[in-house]
Image (cartoon, rainbow, N blue to C red; front, side, top):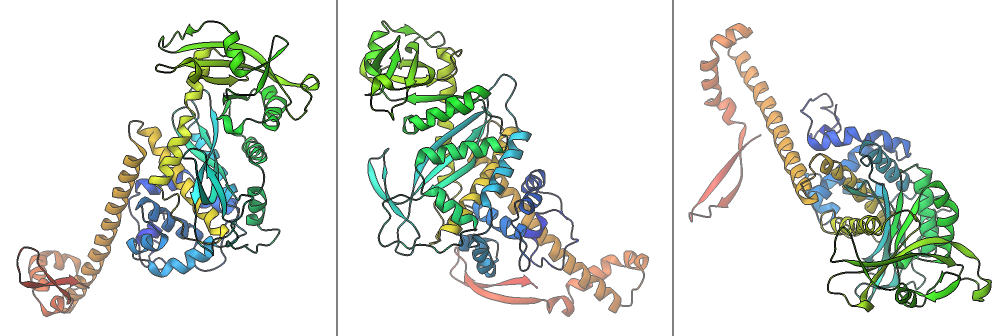
Length: 495
């Protein structure tokens, strides 16, 4: 039996052999081997509702764009499953990160980058606002984009891109140093997975970044370039890139801040603004003559040593200054690349794909209920975010076959397909009960042979639907006013 059938049939334990045509979402779950990956990640249960059933119920609440798990279960007519789902999400021992990496790795194998196109790993962070005295480990952060402070977490996410679509493969729900005094401190066992993620969430952003890249490499994702913005540029990050990644063919392309940072140009230490002036006149970009550029190869030194003359060189990179239409000389942008062989046009083209992570974060917020978790504990919030990211990965696989469709269009298509299959299942179950009652009535009329039933079928059919036997199966549900007329009518429903 297919996985999707388990969610479409109310009496799960008694109709295991009921066969239905596979829906689109059912095929997705089969292709990505979700049930097998759950067991591989050791996310299992010894009793109660099956793990696959709980995950799929959660998937359907996401596809329905429900504001909470409770509302999503009401759509499925299964509100009595809420306690089981909450207990499942609250378990601190499940390794949710391993499950997410397994699903993402399978996606990268099924849909690799085209020949000649690079595979990208992009990192960024965004705010997750949380309020309440019972919420665990919420802290005060500053949103540098909107220049406001908020209470909650920082969602530090890594995205893999095959140059066509982008998927979230790993994240850290960061806890800040400035923890709110009213927030609670969760009690988790030292050996639990959530305790490890909490320890990681309290690290500095640079260390979390390096750990995330190590996990991605450990799972053997195909990566050619790493993209990030100026917030992640640091001495430790550059040391890791030049010492561990560049020798293995993995390069960094990043925005570089034009400020007080010193770069070594022809044995002379210059600030980036002064370096831009030293490079002379602007040139026109061959692919787009409206964009002007300057470029050169510079060295970057270890800033952790105060004496500039004694600072050792970390590595070399190519720095490109770009001035776009409508910008002045002071408003130019600088992009660096550790791959010195790339042209200025190629560097700009590859870095422009960093915007894909902004699209992923926006889709997670608007379409997948990124901040809809109403849990106050840290453990269920990790589980909630992981399941939503996995659902996003599954839906992105449909974009590979329908590249012109948006994520919302794919989600709407799968939602309608699920509703059609659900209605089809309900009609078949009702038809099954009606046929059984019809055959029982035919036996009471003395017809015991199939051939005899076919001969007198029209007569038995009319008699069955006009008999007291069938009318006894019709009950009054409620009285509801008709919108057009002022009178009331009774709705009749078949048991």
